Image (cartoon, rainbow, N blue to C red; front, side, top):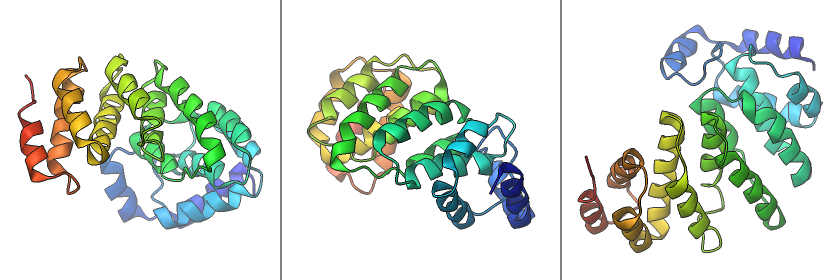
Length: 229
């Protein structure tokens, strides 16, 4: 399959009603064709074992939302080694132009134990970027297999020290902190209480904690008092 064949297939699968609905969610700055997620994943798995590097190398800013998310998912569906995946990510991630592209790709990340440290180093590299969606990719990736004793201090340091760029990297940071609260409630409570983190991120993390079904009512009440103007 080449790019022209993929585009043709996507347009055959496109659903105008789904396109109208999904477009309202602003998943990407790119054209939305309206292909449902099950078909997107099928195509990503096909490309993962077809000519993945070709699709990464040929990706352009003008490609559709669907082609962008398929290409990113294919990296993690592939059987390539972690170093090869990271090298492809370095080419691919700058093309992420929306929350749904980012989060959809991150949802496919599955790492073996030996792959976690190399990919963590790449996550930290992403979080140092001055590009909003590269940072978001790093922060959302950190939600997968990294909220544990080995990485928690580094995660909190990243969220504390980051000079945020926009809405989407801030939201990813708040989401990550809220997820950390599930496993480390007292640590995150003290972190939100004492650490000098971005006020918007703090408030949004508190809001997401309040909405969580995995945090106790007592901790929700305590954390809610930390919201600042």
